[in-house]
Image 1 (cartoon, rainbow, N blue to C red):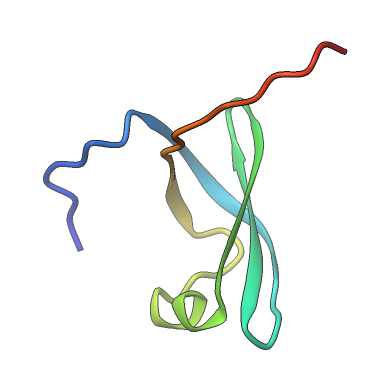
Image 2 (image 1 turned 90 degrees about the horizontal axis):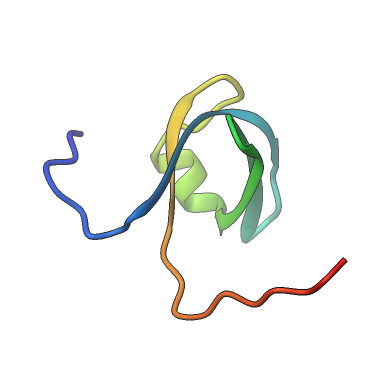
Length: 71
């Protein structure tokens, strides 16, 4: 599959570090140059995309709201 164009501006290339498989949804941790990004996706998608630890992926982040908290 090739991505020809996409309107998501926040993109982080990385490799899957860990997958926590659940019966319906799974957590996929992606190691990127800016740190770990965790995505919750359906377990069906994990299987259909053949996602595995070490697979190179793009983490595409599109949000209508970003909240900040002072630390």
